[in-house]
Length: 402
Image (cartoon, rainbow, N blue to C red; front, side, top):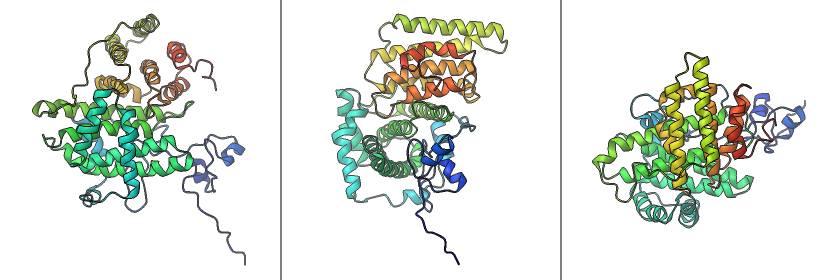
């Protein structure tokens, strides 16, 4: 009687091999089996917001690598709280054993990396660095959810710098810490007060950076996953600012800025101004051909994008300014993006040019290029020429057909 040959299971294999129930060699970006079959090879990504399962390892975000699934619109005024509740299982078991835990060697390494390296990659100027080193880090000593967030972001930073083995190791560690931090943070959202506001601000900002880092697209992405992930990030940003709008006026935040606003910067460069004017003209043409196209509504969206660009020009070293556009976007426009509306995608394609300008930030790397590529690939042929300015700025004008 023949015995079954034993083999080691492939736990990090691609989706195609898992569907065929064959062992994957885990070669990236394309495993050998998919290469031989000449099919697209997709690896499960950690997703934007993930939680430890407790019994079966780490759960994958329900939006990661999703081609046909769109994230739901927020429920209620506190979008961030609702987003947390939607993605969070019963977290009581995760939040009960965190107090007074001693740092293990790996966590100590993450903490050292945070103070010696990561801080300087997420803070944009000397003032921000000082605030992060003192105010935020001090708050983490009293709030475990913020400490876990710091460790998660530090782990992602190490993952970004390492080889494939280190990347897999520290991504898993980051997911673990982020999940525990989110479990502890959920009840805090329901009771923002003077004692936890600074920690809440810090953790919310870290959550957004972690989500960008965890869902970074490939440079030549073609699936709609990057779009869905960005919409999820926009909802988080909107919810974060809603929490600030409600809580910040009631409490002092010290040296932490909570309004997210800055003064208008210098004039927009001529080429960019012409591109925005062309976008306005296209908006008017759309209105002439489609009675359902709301010209005034889309004009406001384009104007808000121009304002975001002026803010970026005023603070060139601050990638966090990018989030101000997501904060201002009405849910109606996000719904249009969810429905893959062509003109909404063209506007978002222009936003990709802004994302690309901050590609030096490791947690934003490849977002501009990858998202623009996936928009172009899924856009109707009549709308594609409208992305020419963004393509030239991002530098993919000769590679869009690949």
